[in-house]
Length: 82
Image (cartoon, rainbow, N blue to C red; front, side):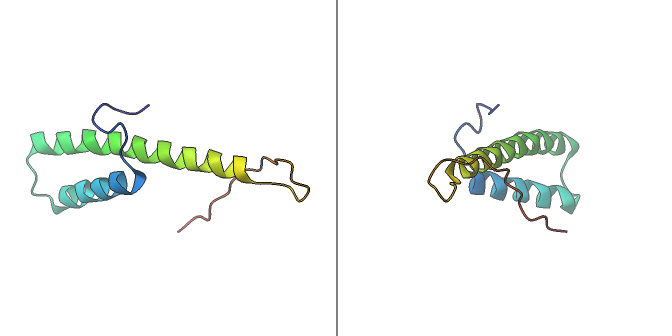
């Protein structure tokens, strides 16, 4: 579910761009047309970040092993920040 504009963007790069977009939008000095464009790009970047995190979560689940060496699929429960 990646876009043509951000097909292979790394998580860190996508997150940094998303944060820059949010910061510029929060300043309140962006024209409406540009604001809509930034919102759309931010939405696409958010999907890229979510995809990268989901992929990482699946890899972690696959890498977990039981003590006897057989594969054990366990849910990954990240710590929630509040």
